[in-house]
Length: 116
Length: 111
Image (cartoon, rainbow over all chains, first blue to last red; front, top):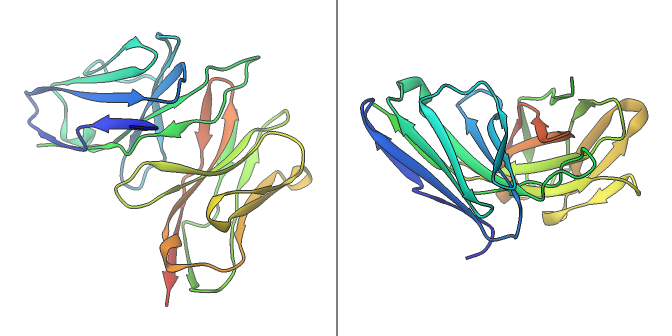
């Protein structure tokens, strides 16, 4: 496979469930990102990882827990979510920033999450 | 702080007509600018980008964009729209470690 893949594509979970979203990039990049896209709201950056180290947490509630075991994989662990967390979760990757400037981000297809 | 404004929430054009989607940015230095397209239920696909050099940038699917520093704009254009271009379009500006996105413009194409 090429590009950025995300699994599952659709997920329905109850508020007491624990689930994980997976993202894998095949582009040789070393930065990865999680975004949340809710209906009628701008794209929200959640987390940034550069070389497996978290460099940004955009005030995301602790019920979202990211994990980046290597530069190719990124996970988002979910627990005790709320209905308002229902959204499209997008993963992206890029080359890590150089000289303070970031590079083009390439996006996966997203996971459509519904919290009941 | 860096910001991006897409003034038009929705735009409807006839198939075969020309298209221009507006984007204005706020950035102190030379910006890196991007246009992405998103079809329903899909991720964002890069259409084109501007880092430096020629201010008229060619992208995929027949799209182009022009960087105008004096107007802080990076408008997306296409000379003849196809029904398959119906989607949501996002302009973005690079800001250090991340991209700042506009709210998006939904393009509808009527036959």
